[in-house]
Amino acid sequence: MLIDGQNITVERETGRILDNVSLHVDEKDFLTIVGPNGAGKTMLLKCLVGVLSPDSGRVTHKPGLTIGYMPQSMEIDPVLPLSVRRFLSLNLAIKADFLSEIINETDIAILLDRQMHNLSGGEIQRVMLARALARDPDLLILDEPAQNLDISGQLEFYKLLERIYNNRHKAILMVSHDLHLVMASTKKVVCLYHHVCCSGAPQAITQDPEFISIFGDDLSKMMAVYPHEHDHDHFKGDGD
Amino acid sequence: MSALIAPLVLAIIAGPVGCLIVWRRMAYFGDAIAHSALLGVAVGLFIGFAPNIGVALICAVFAILLVYLQHRRKLSIDTLLGILAHGALAIGLLLVFWSALETGHGSHHEPNHTIDPHTLLEIYLLGSLENISMNQNIILIIGALMIAVILKLIWEPLILMTLNMDLARAEGVPTLRLQYIMMGIMTALVVMGLQITGVLFITSLLIMPAAAARQISTTPEKMILWAVIFAFSGVLSGYIASHEIHLPPGPTIVSALTTIFIISLLISVFLRRKSPRI
Image (tube, rainbow over all chains, first blue to last red; front, side, top):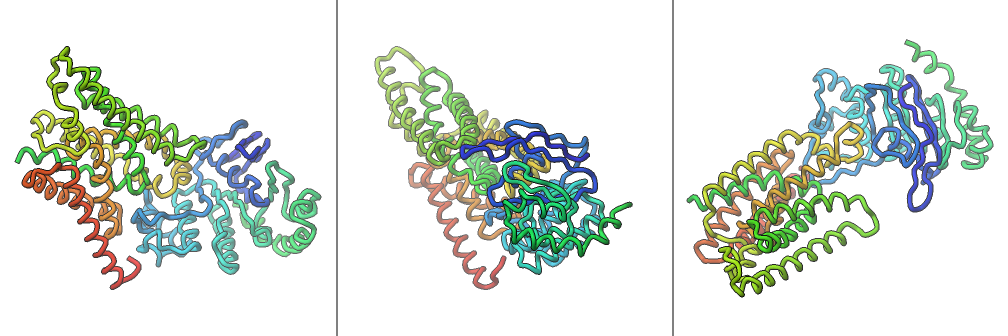
């Protein structure tokens, strides 16, 4: 077990954002949280990371757990002059060869001397992923990591994630709207709408009546087509 | 010459602290703390403390209050800051006049109390050229060194936190503690600058050099270096000019800093035209 969240509840003036949500992440999990806007997905991630303490409920981390966290939509304030190179090693003791390995993997070598605030949305996402990896985490927690990318950029990003999952044996927990793209690589989907509506393997979840009631019949039918094509490789590859 | 020690030490430490205030968008906070300083002066006079101690106490209370209020959401933070700053300033002004009336009857014999309230206000609002004693200079230098050491120790996490609060917290940076430390440093600077620039201009001494430095810097450290250079030249020229022409130092220094800011802005516009995307 890496993270165990029990009965997480968060109240705001508008009402209960999270209502008794329990979720746990194991080693080698690849878990995706889906749900409509305002469902509390970001809030749940923040609670699990430890950035926010829930009003009630409990979050337990495995002792010594390192998390690579990628917050939702990083807006970089131009008032702070900071190069990508500097950002990657900020407040972090990191070996040069490990860093260059990550730079190659995320393909950001050409960005190193750029200023953070001059990066495009997609470039920021790659840099943020590199930063998350630079801490050599046991678990990556990503909040809509592909949201600023165009469709081919999204595909590329999820392929990169899958590679990292298979090669580096990191567990991954992410929030995503790109259901059709995520279904192929993720092992488990949790559907959240203030509470956990349903969870399970991507194939199974698209048949779940609660999933259909939230996302509609058309989408679930569309989803159901996807996962089967991909079942073959990545499940075997992650053994050891 | 020795009259210049205090202002120049203040200018040097204002460089890095000012950059942090600009990065973390704390200019309003600085202003609120500075305005509360006058209340501190008045309370100090009233109770019979040295004004500096009164200022340090009141400013510290305000700083803690501000960090606390930041997390409440009923009123927006700029409204709260406006209320605190001007409330404190108004009450402080009234207390200064009142304490002058009280002592007008001659019951006490504290030397400070015999000062005409208008002179007192001019000193604390606009700064003064009066010589600062060697002891005070030494305290100022030690204070500046301590701030420099603290900043050096918390520099990297502080920058990470400036970039993204959630990211820093997720990586284990104690963000709330750092916020209190920043408030403490700002309070210390207000106290240190009180008699030099006056409460109305201490925030400008912090943010103007940093804002000018941002126009021409590509790393946080270069920005600090330029901020120190600008603060130093602004204070030096402003202080000397105010001495020569007999003008209050606060507004004179800040006018010099404004000029520096405008020049750096023009330079950066010119440079950007030549090579965009610095």
